[in-house]
Image 1 (cartoon, rainbow, N blue to C red):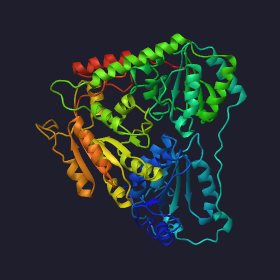
Image 2: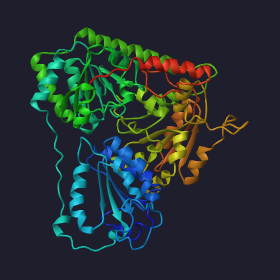
Image 3: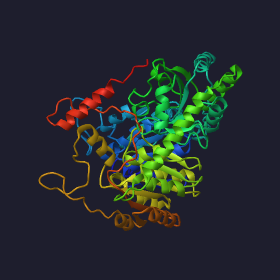
Image 4: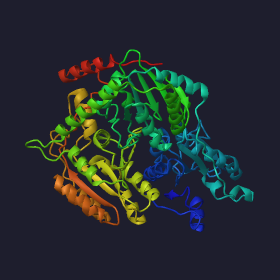
Length: 588
């Protein structure tokens, strides 16, 4: 269990953890949000079959966990949250750090967890745990719709004694069954796929949760169907010529070009967020239809799909057998079209990564060097910003490196604690690389201290590009202006002066981490080699060109643009946005 103690839990849950530390090991994070992200990393590395609990005190300690709770629920990842609450007795008057609402006497700040939890309960009597705990376990293990499970614990109730039955504490095995497809759903999906001339598979995070990698590859190669990957599904298909890489706004042009031409799209374990579908502009065939394999019925029915509510592996295996009986495979000219698009993308990417006169190291070039350095026993953690975009586009997973991307909630500050959780699950084998920008580093670097305390080796790769450059590029593209997104000194009343001089290497070393600075490809290779020899967390800061991003994905994404502006560049951006909106479609 992770926990930060305050007056709401120090004498209740905290006392119990101290007394029974041999049964429940305690880990000390530096921020309540960070400990939830660590639990998410741990759970994802265990395919959702194990997680960590997080205890926080009343008030700000509890609400600090909200972002982590939303991240878990959006990404269908189980975490157990135990925020402290007010006094059940109410004899004390309004408690410190509590909302005092005269119209809603039973409401506390913990009610904010309700919309971001898959299960919520407030424990006002000890015996309520006998009903709440089994329900919480069932919610944590619901593969189709796992997420944050929140049990609010009144601080006085935490300390109460109760004569629980001994059977409540007996070990119990919870069976997480793989759901097979229903015959009727399978038949409809097979009929639709069997009529396809230009099929495409979109592999999502459900492929990884269900450990369906081999089933996916067998399906693709048996039937000649090209495969594109969402952010959560990155690395689902390794070492196959049918892999087109990423899809959507942060995707490859190969995937997106075939998506525009596809007549049937098989969606496997994906939520189909707007980044994946290009805000419903990507699929342009007039008669395009969708088939979806998903544990969750809500996700399975998106885009008017022929829904197959099933485990990804069992769904793919069953569907492949039925298609094989029909003798169906994709036409060879379509498979050839996919290979041609992939070759073109590879050539375009290599040209884009080539050094340019007068330009320093780019983020893409540095990532390519990290890609060469990473091996099959290594893992990579990345979340929001330009690191996510570039990893999604260019990272080659054929060597077997596991990639854990959090883009569903796109949470800055998630990466370092998630890397620690992944290391806890992975054990000492291999490297755990955390890839972030300097903006994200400033949001979550204190959890490096937790890594030092616990001896959790991660290598944090920080791209120093002086700000939030991903959203900065979007801002310039949609408004024609630059405002408030770079780390600049104030000049003339605005933040438009020189870049703020930060020494992130010195910051990391001040914690006790090994830290290195690199500005060239050779220096990156040397720094990664040096970091690999360190037994504790290491930080590699790489100076990169601030405004040099990888080539675009040829995929539109909807972001609200000002309809009325006096600036000509913003007016032109609005006209381009309106043209993109014209391509949006409703699929059912």
